[in-house]
Length: 209
Image 1 (cartoon, rainbow, N blue to C red):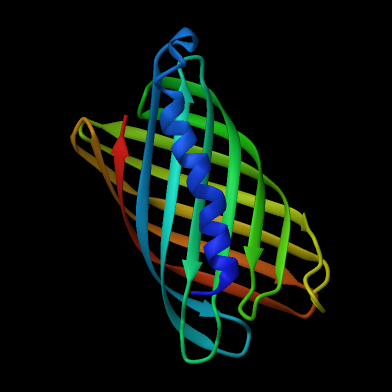
Image 2: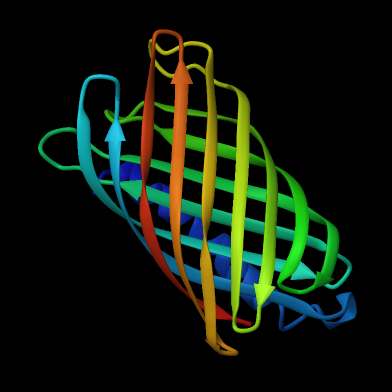
């Protein structure tokens, strides 16, 4: 694992732990709902010249307040091996529910920050815009998410970078404290003269509080 990947994980872990610890002292804010979990992402990376099989671990977490505000963060890593190096992406978002008839049925929008590392180690970052929706079905909910990064910083020789992220899947809550997810994720970085695209299935398991 590269040093940068370790640092990326180290950046997100305190944020997610802080979200969990915050619930013990935030009673004045009203009911809170959140989760902290880990993922396994099996995907391919297309860098314009190679289609590379990659696997990667990740962590994610979110916290919602009763009045419809939320904060979320996630980190995904790609490790194709065979001399290609690693890649990673990290994001954190502030979200607001626009419609929320139930806890697991809502439409939300968000504003956040995205950092992404290309294969080979160069990184880019910028503001991201988020739209998210869920539909609750008893112990299940189906979900979808789309994020757009319209203008990201230059990375080495890469210029005019923008990005997008799409996720869709289903979640099961067999016990009040456990949340399981199966989803499909697409992450794209486009730049002048090329792109780097990652897509594949992921499994997740989270502690729900």
